[in-house]
Length: 115
Image (cartoon, rainbow, N blue to C red; front, top):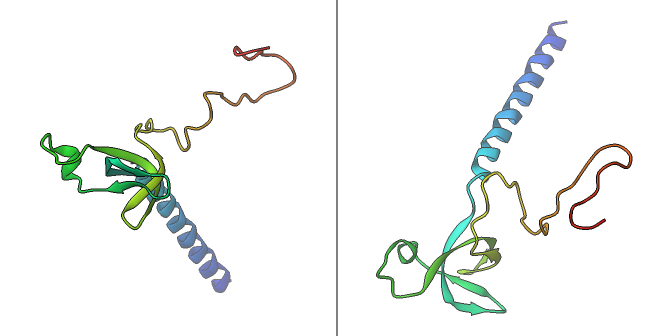
């Protein structure tokens, strides 16, 4: 019986730890991934060149800099993102085309964009 109680406690600790980890990751993911880039440096093969954040915060920057959200960074370059800041709480990609998913029973509602 003591072994079963010990196993139950260790399982509770593991599950509690997983909950804390999930909460921490969720809190961190709410901040958009942004990088300061040179807007004039775009190439189709590499994307935009990442520059110092000072270029995005200073009015006297030597380059035409702006924040680039999302994308993948590789060797000082970033591509696959956008200059548009994602809305907070959007929870992911904004490439849905403005359509919402409707869930429910049979028949019923009509979509306002067609019919």
